[in-house]
Length: 218
Length: 218
DNA sequence: AAGTAAAATTAGGCTAATCTAATTTAATTT
DNA sequence: AAATTAAATTAGATTAGCCTAATTTTACTT
Ligand SMILES: [Mn+2]
Ligand SMILES: [Mn+2]
Ligand SMILES: [Mn+2]
Ligand SMILES: [Mn+2]
Image (cartoon, rainbow over all chains, first blue to last red; front, side, top):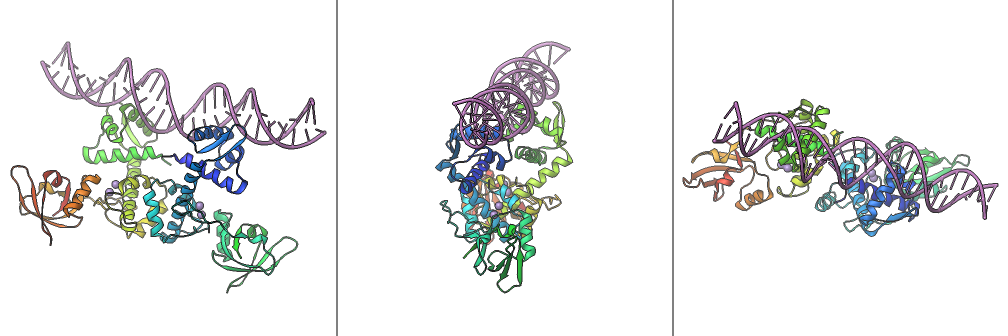
């Protein structure tokens, strides 16, 4: 079907469109793919030939409907495998991403759907990212960054925007886990340090850097 | 690490050495890999450069210790994934091979060992093929072909030598499953048709072609 | 509007893995 | 032992995905 490389480009373009708007720049894609700009131009021409992206010379490009479908499929695979690795095999949430990067490219509709059933049709992966259903429908998130809350606000910790092992480990050490109820006790004026009250646990102080990578739902 | 292609070559060479003796011919490998002879020569030169095979121009080649280790690792992956697909996801034994051909190339020691534990350290895959342990040790099989038995002999059905879905489906239809106790009631002189008594079940008649693809242990 | 800086593309090359056609080496037959 | 056939290798191309260096296009300043 499609090569791993194509699938990785599609996924990268999808995520860039999600965060940076419809049209993607060659340089931005080169950066996230870890290749140089001419390689992207080259690849995009081939992908445009296969109708996976719409491409206008020097104007940028975006996914076609077909390309979007493939991208969402890969994301579905990735997140379901992450759930498997954590829930069934006992991996920690900071260990699974790289393995899922490989597993996401296994081609079998049947497999991913049976895996989905085996896992009990999870709605989110171990990092709180929503899992597209078999039709490619991805629930719209209602979460906001913890850094947008003020003293007195409350919410539930639903996800992270930084997926690095370093950050995830830091959260573990701080005793903050997905699903925790969080109340903002105070925000330091000077450096925006957050003092949090975790439901039934002790208070935790987190930097702005951390607060700015945590998603909460009111 | 190694490319999928390299891994597939290594696995193919390993299996050829197992059945056809130490030294493998270019043409034989080309045949099972589904490529033409010059491609094999080419690939072998590269693999010899990486010390995965020992190669003497026009004399044939065999796996190095290093190459053998990689091959057995791939086989371990393949067979464990097949167990997962059948035991956990509910696939039939005739459906899993192609998916396992993909899964076997996932690179993670940690993953395969956790999978092994999750499955309860199975000794054989759904087709009865032995699973190498984490050290690459592969139990020597004590099974023989059903076609070598005579009237009155008994045994347990432990594996197949033909892994095609067509054959596996045929066995299902005949009501013959892995682990069944089998007694040879008689062998037809003319065409070597076998009449079998399955423990607690009705008699089954199978052709020589079938008897010649079934492994039994005395 | 012209000049400069940044972004994108073109041109030309490289490697892995494949191919076909031609040639060489080894094995069999007579 | 010579002739023939079969197996293997060499020679020369191709494709996907990448690279660097050079050029062109677009965006931003003055
Ligand atoms: Mn991930
Ligand atoms: Mn994730
Ligand atoms: Mn198999
Ligand atoms: Mn098998």
